[in-house]
Length: 51
Image (cartoon, rainbow, N blue to C red; front, top):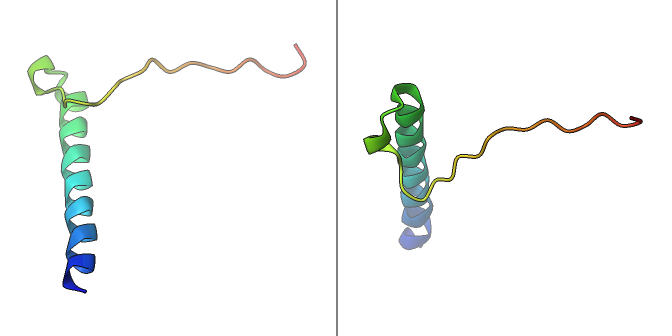
C-alpha cells in the first residue's frame, strides 16, 4: 500500500519540477536552460465560422 502512495507523490514532484524549469526558461529565455523533451509550438488562431 505504501508504494501506491509514494508513486503518485513522486510523479507529482517530477511534474512540479518540470513546470518550474519550463517557467524559468520562458522567463529568462536562456537557451542553455531549455528543458529536454519539451516542444514549444507557435500559437495560431482558428478562422471564424461562416467566412
